[in-house]
Image 1: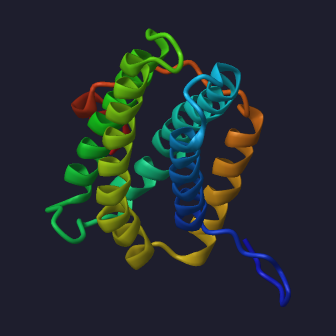
Image 2: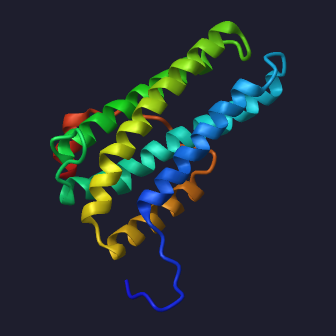
Image 3: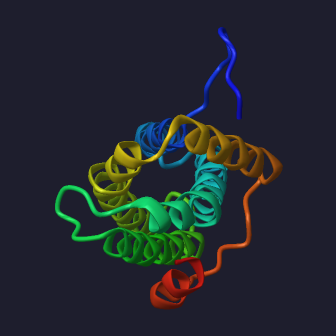
Length: 179
């Protein structure tokens, strides 16, 4: 990538942070909607579920393979492998808790309990990822690498605006295949 003055540079870590902000916003929005307004709850949840699944898949395709190549561990993670293993396990938990939300009657106490479990799993993941993997990548990636990954990440998310089929992955097999 050759940058010229005035070029817009995309950064993969910023795109991930932007998605995290949107996820937090949508979870908060669900808390503010009247429980009887099942049409609104359903619409917002569908959008959030699609974002969660597509975001996780985009990270697994574009971010974590490169982190495994250049990362060394940041904050309380000993290595890029540790950061990645935790993230894949977290993504599986988010997919599973998201599926649990879909099994409950929208607006019911059980639906909100499942939604809270999904929000907790996602919130814990985002906090750890922001502290570890994103910091590790920012410290080690050059601008061209970050820009290239950001373009591919954004294009993937745009192509899959309505979501992807959520598939859990074995963290160890993932690391072995992408190291």
